[in-house]
Image 1 (cartoon, rainbow, N blue to C red):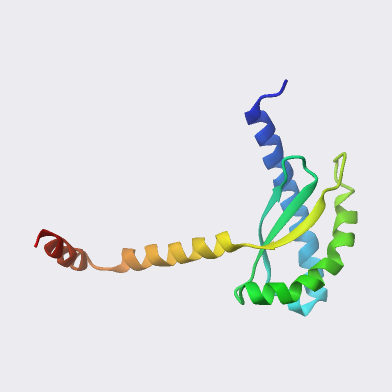
Image 2 (image 1 turned 135 degrees about the vertical axis):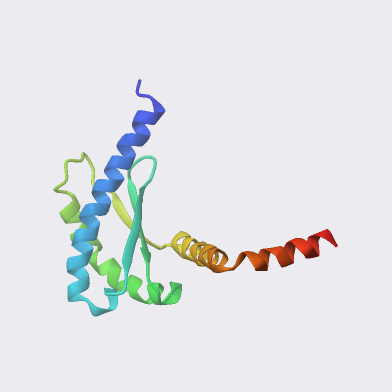
Length: 133
């Protein structure tokens, strides 16, 4: 029986392979379709049974723009699956396209951290004085 950690490693390796292949294929598709040019694939996640592959996209235009372009993405789904069938895998997973909220949250946190980093130490001394009163 395989250990849980070795199973997780194999799934992570498969996700990395899928991310590399799908990113390459998506780059070619975005050259043909102008509405997809602002999109970035941020990550790929396989379901536990490896039957579904969730592809997470980010676009600076936001969730609404993503949903407008989702119909175009769905048109590329069969050709993406066919291209992925050439990989060394027993089954080709069904593809699900999702907007990556996690990436937006990460960008907001990084912006806040950068803002705090750029503040002077005197600003923090004022806060300390208020806490002591």
